[in-house]
Image (tube, rainbow over all chains, first blue to last red; front, side, top):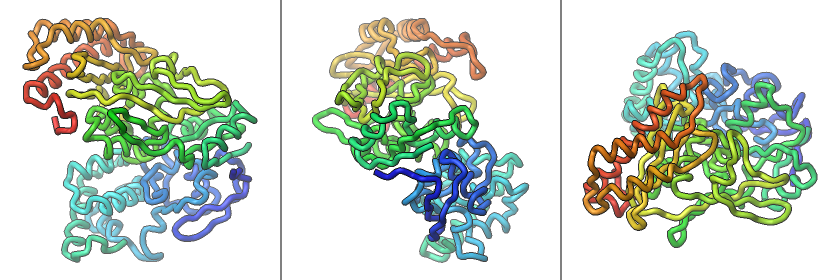
Length: 168
Length: 292
């Protein structure tokens, strides 16, 4: 049976990282930001309420603040930094810019991860489905109208491109 | 501090036998919050999410068998046909992110009076299966949870499965909170009309220290309703609501007062019963898999 030491490995965005943890109780969010220099997942509530630290763990959308980092060894972790090719924007990110869906920007990375996940599973999601999908991503600037517009824009673009997977 | 990551139940029990005080980690949505806020400083964590014996669900000969690691997302997506009220309850838990992580075993182990999986499991007389150093034992959910965040868990034990019989008939789950998502229940209720046994089954949430069924109200409704037509005199429905709320034992806290919760339970009981009676009237009684 595996027992974690304070040095352990995590696979993030297709790269292996060695983590030198200060303490084995650190959350994945903390390790991403403070140990590995991956600040895309934002730290706001630390209790799974706000969604700004959303990542994909083995392809499943979760709040990284509620994941014990030392228990994520062996899992495939994808953060907002790893959604597209380095230096390029994904179609969701570009649509956020085009539609003015970013105000202060703090919730944006979590929303981008959550919406990539939604549009992967439900390319034709209607607005109610979108609302439910991001119900745990809080935007305190109340920018939801523009966010829905960005989702609709991505759906139009992907439908026009015809393969439903453009930009990922 | 150590983190142990067993893949088999025997390994988990081994790890626990050497340190019975170790903390169990499943979905992390309760436990990690406590750790993040410094309310817990665990010395040893047994991380359960890989343990095969705790995964998956099946229904065999009319009996459901859910692994402790079954998530709200699985309940929401995979059990909606068989257990629409369970799926509805799961869908009200947190956000998609939380439902992807949180587990039914965790909901039972945390034993919050607001646990959204608990009312329906209570209404269905669910049994909790625990494995420990002395082997396996099975006890009623209503015995396992002994009070707010208190359980009958023995040192070194792990919840492995949750089991309950399929009940034929309409079922509904209703919950009161400030919004549709990210809400810890102010009050909630599951109601099942057991058309074969002609029993009304009710489980309350956030309305008492531990899961309980309002037996007197259930028996009153079962006798008062016409099981063939789904009709019931309005005065009796009102009396049912009063009896259910009389059986509730809520507290006043930052989410609601005793008075509000008592009133809410009355409303939820009448509303759930009315909807379930409507299902019988519409001929949906025998097939809980149908969209109600």
